[in-house]
Amino acid sequence: MTDLRKEQLVLLRFEKQIAGLAATLAAGAVAAKGLDGKLHASEGAEAFASIQTALVNLAEVTTNAHDAMNAKAMEAGADLFQAAGGGLPKFEPLGAVRSILGLG
Image (cartoon, rainbow, N blue to C red):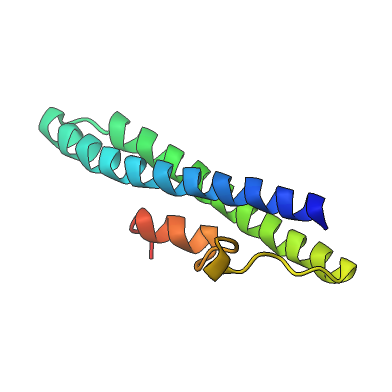
C-alpha cells in the first residue's frame, strides 16, 4: 500500500505541472494568434495548436493512469488519498487541462 501511495503522490505532482503548463500554453497561444494576425502568418498559432493537442493527450493518459491506479488499489483493498487530505484531484486532469485551454 505504501508504494501505491508513493506512486499516487508522484502522479499528483505531475498533474500540477501539467496544469501549470496548460496555463502557460493558454497565455502563449493568445500572444501567438495576435502576432500571427499582425504578420499575416499562421505558423505560431499552428505550433501552439500542435502543442495543445499533445498536452491534452498527456492529460488524458494521466487521467487513465489515475483510473488504473484506483482499480489497482481496489483490488488490493487499499484506499487512495482523498481530495481533502491533499490526494485525488477535485477534477480529473483531462477536464482541468481542457478547461484551462478553453476547450470546454
